[in-house]
Length: 189
Ligand SMILES: CC(C)(COP(=O)(O)OP(=O)(O)OC[C@H]1O[C@@H](n2cnc3c(N)ncnc32)[C@H](O)[C@@H]1OP(=O)(O)O)[C@@H](O)C(=O)NCCC(=O)NCCS
Image (cartoon, rainbow, N blue to C red; front, side, top):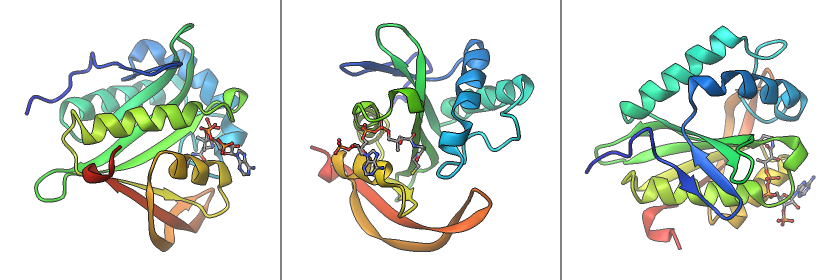
């Protein structure tokens, strides 16, 4: 199967999801800085003190584009379809092909536009992409039990709870339990 190229765009009603470009780096850096407090308790995004430097973020975007070409992970910036503003990110990472055909799902949204259903819209599009054109069979998400908004996104996008993984990821400096959710291609509505 032909893999989706780096010119892929996923339009939704209010958003356009697309791979990051190095020209996004200054804006992305500003958005990450402005959301550092919002992301710190829940997400591995932007763990560097004061936010990532231009150099490290450029390296990150370059490596994300290489990983896309190599079918290792697919990072999508979530942008406003009208203004083009970067409002978040959805990542399908650590792909395993063969008999697993699986990826991990991660996401965050700018706190200024949270609570409007935007991440539900973005995750739905990303799941359609993963289980459709990417040919994956399973996508998994791991959520800290206290992360109520993320648990709602999982429920609204059809992710099925599988159980609790103890001390699963080191977030905000602590090995934290996570609730594991997944969806397989058969379940995509
Ligand atoms: C999780 C996150 C991406 C959700 O983005 P979003 O665009 O606000 O999501 P949506 O608007 O689609 O849905 C959020 C839901 O959570 C609900 N919610 C928001 N705050 C809540 C709270 N404190 N308690 C309970 N529910 C809450 C909203 O009401 C909405 O549910 P509803 O549609 O039933 O009303 C966003 O909060 C975020 O970026 N958090 C920080 C990073 C993060 O946690 N990433 C995920 C790691 S697993």
